[in-house]
Amino acid sequence: MTLLQLDQLGLRRNGQCFGPFSFALRAGERLALLGPSGAGKSTLLKLMSGELAGERGRLLMQGQPLAQLSLPERARRRAVLPQSHQLAFGLPVELVVSLGRWGRESPSDALHLASALAWAQATHLRGRRYDQLSGGEQARVQLARVLVQLIDTEAGLLLVDEPLAALDPGLQLELLDTLTCFAAERGHALVAVLHDLQQALGGFERLLLLRQGQLVADLPAGKAALPALGELFGLRLQALSLPEGGWAVAAQRAAGCVVGCAKGYAA
Amino acid sequence: MAEPLPLRQPLLQLPSWRWQGLLLPLMGVAVLLACSQGALQVGLQDWWALLRGEPTPGAQVLWQLRLPRVAFALCVGAALGLAGALSQGLFRNGLAEPMLLGIPSGAVCAVALTLTAFAQGLGGLPAAWRPWVLPLAALGGAWALCALLQAVARLLAPGAVLGLLLAGLALNALAMAVVGVCTTLASDEQLRTLSFWQLGSLAGATWPVVALLASALGLMLWGAGRMAQGLNALALGEAVAAQIGMDVRRLRRRLVLAVALLSGLAVAWCGLIGFIGLLAPHAARALVGADQRRLQPLAAALGALLLLLADTAARVLFIPAELPVGIVTALLGAPLLLVLLRRAQRELGGAW
Image (cartoon, rainbow over all chains, first blue to last red):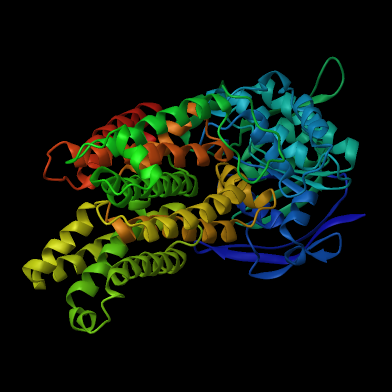
């Protein structure tokens, strides 16, 4: 089933052209957006969430133009985990999470709230003030807020904008696992802007590669994607088999860089 | 830390009982104090005389001067406190005051124009209308500046709170320049009236004005209560608020309108009174936390209490002369603003 359809969707922003993007996203699919800084990953994500309106082209959600859906209806079907976790005031944790149920409060909210906090492993943060939490704890609370938004929907859309970049590697993997399991259980599609190639190849099934606002490749995650990825980032990528099965990526800078760098990649 | 509220709430949430229990006696003491002090001391026997309808001088002072003034101070203070709570939520900054939007200066600008440029037309009005002209002009000025601010901010930096803030700064300067021109052209008598507006005083209290203000305040408290959860969502950021399904632009429009109305109403009858909108919400946040549903009623109550105390001090300190209450609130509030600035600097570092 096609969940989201981008049809020649594009816009100009700060003098740079983004798109036109044309691709379809199936329900339950896991898609990673990859590319160098400034390639337009976040812009594409904002186009997909409807935060930015395309200047041309169409964006269809389950066959309907997104712009025709009401704001609460959109919120029921797609949630966005933002890049920044800043909050203007020190609100209580429960209040922050419960805002994910905005405009469709129901008697089962307390249940949803508890379940979302449990998913995000944030139950122990109940009763705390958001501004007194550590960065990792704030990320858990934001994750719970996003999960509670889609907790009673099927085949929704979860968009994730480099939220994990500032967190420690253990927490990154843990939160990504949570997102993946949560999405799989409900048939949500998961779209994430990522920087870590290992995370993208390990946790996602489809990769979109972007450069200078254009889509350069749309390919399944796997060893076959390594040459295209290497070319995109200017890296020499190798798949290394792990003793316990599976494989990992090793990256080296591609040959042909300036001589002064030679020491760097010999190491 | 207070127990968080459940999601569904009555429209107007009273502060938790502890603060309510403490606030009511405090308010009562302040009212009694404000009523008794002044050029003429009012004692218990005058209250008794007032209740029995005996026309003693003390009872008359109480009914015609002190009580309306106390009620007036409470209403204006509550309006300023609530306006502060709303604008801090709107600008997502604990230091944002309605003054920052330049809305009061829009009101003062309209008053200055009415006093000087349209002085001829003013003289031609029936005598019964004259006391209402300047307050109406002030309210109109606040409205006009607010509408202009909305339009300019949307044109220059759509959706950005910082853009709105800077546009407010520019319009503030513009309004004050117009006031400056009017000051230069004004006669001595006009100058005195103008300086009353710029310094702020509660001396113009009458029962009809109090009744008008109190009913407007009641409506605004109800409306603000309905926007409280939206303001909470706005604390997450405008983009996130839109993603959870909120109509951010509609909320922003309503908030700017509410802030303009509240501070315009306050300015309309008593001129510029600063810092209540900063102090009251700040103290309220320290007591009950940042949840707007708890914050709003308490900020209004604290604003009322603060302004009543400041006005009593303004009346009593230099009997028989009376200080403009705006001077007292500035004397109290400005140093505290500096302390808050220092704290914000320490908490947020250079990024602030």
